[in-house]
Amino acid sequence: MPSNSKNQSSHRNARTRNLKFESPLLRILVAEAARRGWTLAHLARQLDLTYERLAQYRRADADIANASRATMAAAASLLGIPLAGVYVLAGKVKPEDFLWPNGESVQEHIRRNLERLASDPFYGPFTSDELMRADIKVQFLVSVLYRELSRPSLEAPKLPTWLEALHKASIGSERAEDALAELRREPSRTDLF
Image (cartoon, rainbow, N blue to C red; front, side, top):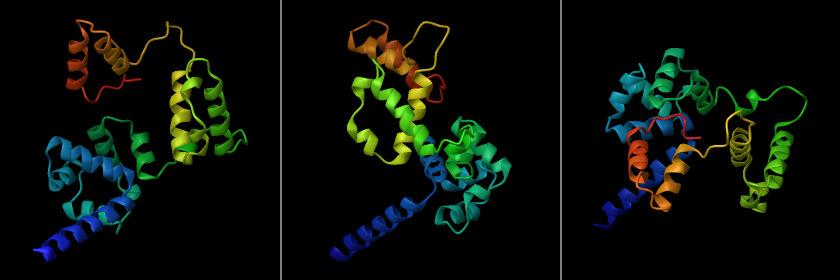
């Protein structure tokens, strides 16, 4: 019996090591396939790939960043995101490729945005020193999200849909359950922020 447990543990450790090196695009595609109850063979067909090719991508014998445009478009459709987002997830395009070439480094751009965030009267109190020491990818994500949230708008400020639904639920609004149920039915909504 202990040898079986040891084999299971060894298999689990190998799987964890493999996931660590798997591209973010593959991790998200496999998770989406699992969420939908699909096999990996079915996922491969949806991406216009053979199962063998998908396995090569997962083992890193081949790089999904070099997949065909049709495969990338199928992944974008499956995930409900723009094709450019798929290229970013695959590592073909880097988030910093979207910055204007004004001579400012990515780190400087992020630092400047995080300083704005820290001094923002609404969002600033929610920041911490740990954010300035966080991994650059975390800082970049927070910087982009803050920039999106702080964009001037002609409309009156509005809470994100999901936050508004949670707020209604927290105050006991009669429509809270309906709003939350609607959000659960529409997992691919793009207006969450």
